[in-house]
Amino acid sequence: MLTPYADVLRRPGAVRMTSTGFVARLPISMIGLGEVLLVSSQTGSYAVAGALSALGALSNAVFGPLLGRATDRYGQHRVLPALVTVHVLALTAFIVLVRAGAPTPALVLSVTLSGGTFPNIGALVRARWAFLLVGEPRLLRTAFAWESVLDEVIYVAGPVVATVLAVSVVDYGALAAVGLLLVIGTVLFVGSRGSEPPAGGVPPRGQGSALRYPGVLGVTVAFVFLGGLFGSFEVVTVAFADEQGVRGWTGLFLGLYALASGLSGVVLGAVHVRAPLHRQLLLFSALLALVTVPFPFLHSPWLLGVQCLVAGLAVSPVLINGFALIERLVPNVRMTEGLVWTNTGIGVGIAVSAALAGLVIDSHGASTAYWICVVSAVLVLAVVLASGRALDRAWASAHATSETAAEG
Image (cartoon, rainbow, N blue to C red):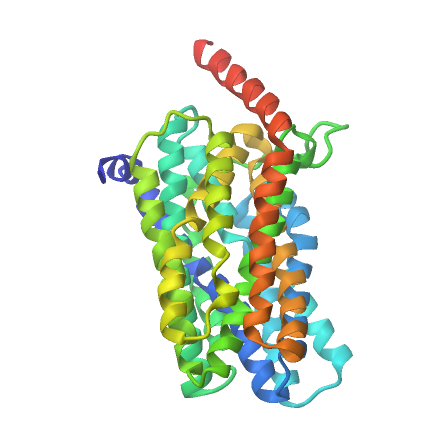
């Protein structure tokens, strides 16, 4: 079962690239939760904490595609170090300002700059895989599954570490770890030059956003609502654990959700499914909507833990097929930007849902706020359904192009 993973990891530079990328993107599972834990401990308000965390995510969503395009044009080793330097400085300022009780405009400015410069390491790693495995779609899907499994490991370990640091050590501990891990991981990742795709240079005049390629917009919009699920689930689960008197269990709940997702990703990446990627995306989106429904009806931390295990099984398959579909729809010279757009969609969803969740929690409680998760999951399915014909045409066109290239 694990043979396909061994095949992709044997590629020259693959192990070094994916392991250093793992370190560099571990902070992605810690920064939002770290912001919520820090701000809520200082202000006592989940609405304020959720709004600031959402603002950082929204800023990342706005600037992410532009930075992705710059990375495609100039190369990862030129763009990434500068980006991380600015981010760490802005994040440090945010920590200091929150603890000093600084006025809201200062907090807004620092979290906006920090969020806007948070690097999308996941997209950079996947762009490297697309370069290493060009012309090998089956192995590339396995590689994307491998990265999704690592993402889930990150989402198992990250929330636990963030919660322990922020609750048991010091309230800014999670964010301090974000900065440290990002610096170390980036230095190691950038040093792995053998797997870095070549810079594409200035694209031909008239080429616009990667969203212009058929099918990309539909997947991106679906990922907006997938981000809505992620953002609301994280904030609501923090509040649910707090209401139940088990705030220290927050990382466990989030970790169980991610663990189940990772296990399903391992299985999906190891098997060969004949159905087209967009049909698989539809199937797993329907499953995701179904398994998310029970959350608002739970009032026990033990039952929530079980539900997190069940519901998490549907998450990774949606992510894997979405990323793999983008790789087939976007040319290699725009790959980073195309993959960043899907992450941008997730970021927008996280931003809106985290802020909305904070408001609903403060006014109606955590169980009611879980309805945001349910609605988000249903909307993922609705968008994939509505995009069915466009994705059919886009898939047929991309499949024909890949066959022509293979014959050439």
